Image (cartoon, rainbow, N blue to C red; front, side, top):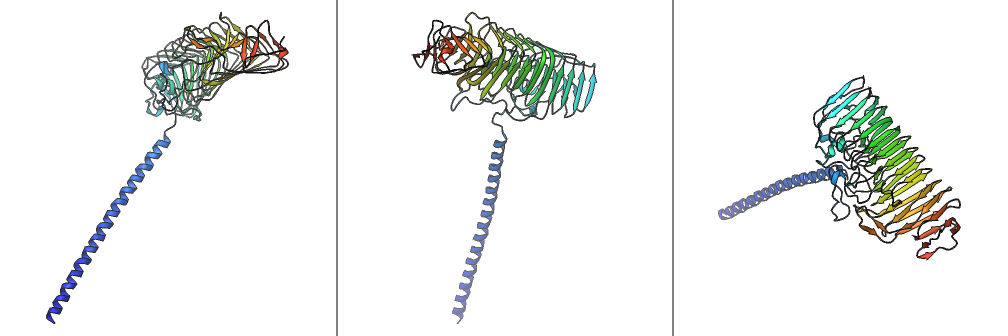
Length: 501
């Protein structure tokens, strides 16, 4: 019996040990599971945060150049964007939030000031900074700005070092007075709409209204009136003169915006400094526009310029950046990120266009629509080239143009590269005296094309085409009798068109 009791005691002890071991194992397992769950939660949170951070970064984050295509290296970006009107080289733009804005005078609430002097001689400092969502009125100011900036795109995109900078949603009206900037990276009047340089994004409501003011800038990267980040500018009867490189009189940059100009004189004298440079929506009426060294106007990417009853004169005698052609109206896409890709629009109604040197119109690396009605066009260049659509110094896009002429007289050669496309529409009594082919050389004499690409020409019953040379198109729509051969031949897909006069 005693042995039996001892055996039972031993069995009970063994069971107790096994039970304790099992409990320990279970506790250990639970601890491991708890730790594992915590790690998983932390990992998931980190992953979520990472995804959220990436999703908050805009596609065209300032300071980063998008690639021209899968695996392609984007073209070099001399002078800011590798094209006319680009900014001088400098530090890449990051974000306006990274900028420590300073000014000789800063207005941070609604105010009205008259007859004041605002002056800055310090680099990266504005003479007058208006940073408020309230309305501000400035009358007869005397603004002077010196002090070069090497802020690069912070000056071009966000207004660092501008003589007058308006931001944060203010509606500011400036009337009369003078604004003088003698520094690099010092735009005259800068309207920054606060969208962080995201092309196509809405701004914060910043609106600058400037009237009867004289604006003079002499430094590089110093436009007369400048609009970016979704800002809005209204300009009335201004007298604007710029002399620096990449200093358009009417200038825009990344983030775009809207510009309305009525009356006034806008003159640019520097290299890569058109009278107007558009990465925005720009409307100009009743103004005199003069460019003494560069293109008259330049449109980049998905943006537009509309001129109504304006007199535009351009004397483009030197190529800038990647450009290899001289021209008066340039429409292109640099792929720098300063403008989204898409259809560019140039519309001109009434007024005059005087092209002293190079091609009147030049389209490259983008899709462009040119609309003309009742414009007096004078081409003083000996080669008399009205339009070229072809390769130039950029890649990643196509060369496609549509020229719509209504009640319009056109004359000169039309050049369409072998890999390029043109649609020419003549309506409402328009006339074209010229020829179309694909023999193209650039300003340095390099052959760009030898054969015409895809060309479609449409004449309505009231419009005519007088040939001044053998012409080559892939499609002709209209009455052949409205084509006056003048001793030359119009070939449609290699076949001579019959029935011409």
